[in-house]
Amino acid sequence: MSSERWGLGPVEIDRNAARRATKLAAVVLCLVMAVQVVIVAVFTLGPHPLQSVTEVPAEPDAQAWDGAPSETLSLDRQQMTTPYGGGSVDNVTVQAVTNDTHVAFRLEWEDPTADTEIDEPDAYSDAAAIMLRSGSKPPVTMGANGEPVNIWYWRSSWQHSDADPGGDMYAYPHPDAETKPGEAAENPVSQSTNAQYGQNYYATGFGSLTNAETQPVAANGQRTDDGWAVVFQREHETAGDYDAVFEDGEQMYLTYAIWNGSADEANGEKSLSYQFLTLDPGDGTLSETDSADDEGANETDTNDSGVVASATTSARWAARAATNWPAAIILATGAAWLISYWRIRE
Image (cartoon, rainbow, N blue to C red; front, side):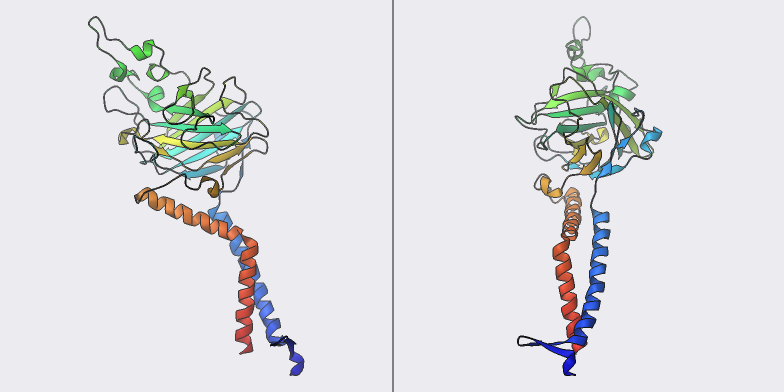
């Protein structure tokens, strides 16, 4: 019996119990590693390849999108500056494809009403936008001084309006004839037609949105069974001062905003993602940024959006805990060995 025991200082170890406890601890080790793999797969949005295609599609229902990986981002109401509001759209699903010359992004979201007419007061258009910046992650507040962002914008009234897209919203009464000073001044928002259905903007913070001199962005939106699907397309190379740069070694940061016309959303009242995606043109990945990078960006209140944000935060905490594998393995294996040894020795 004495051969089955050995001393470790003042502590006497039962060898038989120790061997059996070690076997059980090995089983626990395998289980912990398997659980980590499952949690990471469920809760994290790992890198997805930016699908390379022969021809970058301009149509939202093009076959090229069928095999393109996707990321779904939660949206919340805009609550950083006046006018606060929005939040009627819960999430947006994003896809990306590229080739040697062009890149395209596809956005899809649920919206039961097609709001395409703004020919009278209190009529608002459905719309979508992508905010991009090359190199470093910009403030989510539409950039900042010294940190300009590139914004691509699509509005359903430009593409799907049955009436004059400007209508009475941009008309001004005159004794001789009705005039449209915005259209006469070539304000891009006031134009009756927009051949590309999209606009290219720059911004350095709230209230600084500026129409870019160059307009290389084309957009195309279509109704789906549940809402809208919109494709933004652009050549890799452009001449604009602050256009997003799709070059090797220049990581791209992107975030998104959606406007629901029937919910009276316009301007700052919108549903937006406080989480950035990153696009690395060098290795072709589109992925969600580390949640720690965006900590504090989305200060939600106690509304429904706060519940969604809380659930998302909990999921990401679980993912981070699972990926801290050295500590998890040591703690779980050590605890399993001690408990097993104690029970077997009894």
